[in-house]
Image (tube, rainbow, N blue to C red; front, top):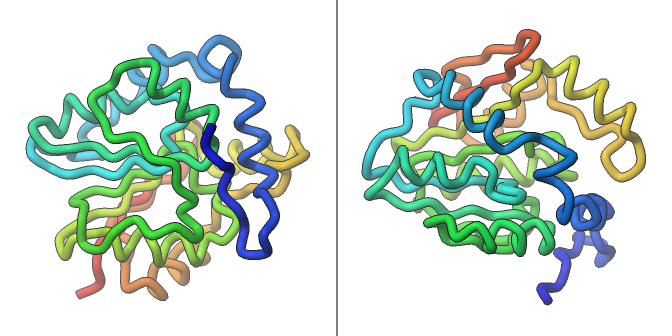
Length: 209
């Protein structure tokens, strides 16, 4: 059994325990895997994934999207990370062509200049230290790399849903555009595209010129 990631204070992040508890029934009672892939595929032109790219999927969960991502970048590679061991165990069982790793993006090293694309799909609000996470993700990008943040709902919907759920994820919000700009600028990134409407949140960032 993997050890749950620790916060800088040495305490287990309560979000990891929250998602560990949900993992065994995530695909049945949470997001429908087939619908998730279908809806993301409808926005393939936004993602602009290309064959041969190396991609880091942050917060892969049970690998609902991982197989589709691998098919888009093949013969490139997908490294899929999550901070909830039970989610990763469920992902492993699917036999997806990806390198699954236990990692807390707020504190664990992800490598330097390793990836063409870093994708945070349905995960960014759960980073307890968003500034540290963005800095870490920026380091992992190659010079021409892109950071993508995507949700199949707008920020108002996402933020309200997490507040309604409460507990470990209560208050887990997507930042405003202004806040995103500051977070990204501190890490040497700038927004290339930002969409925030009912049914879709999409942000693309790249290195500042």
